[in-house]
Amino acid sequence: ITVAAPKAEKKIATVVFTTDLDCHHCAQKVLNTIPYEKGIKDVQADVKTKTVTVKFDEAKNSVESLTKAFESIKVKVVKTKKVE
Image (cartoon, rainbow, N blue to C red; front, side):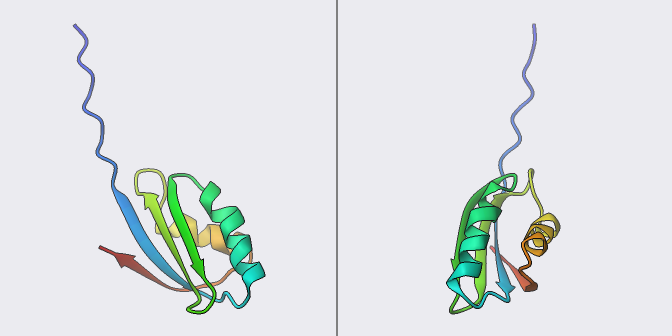
């Protein structure tokens, strides 16, 4: 008899990144890139408040690797806040 291991519960985190977004072109660059990172569930960019809100599966990604993804498209992350 084979017993399947219980599936790990998905832990979805919501993180608000304060960035240096200053135009809709920059926001579009974020929306064209970040959703394709591993485990991403939702991405919202707001140019007015210069924030990007990302929902992701913590088993597949981390704040550190998302910060690197922003840097790879030349978007500077100033502050990160986890939403409970």
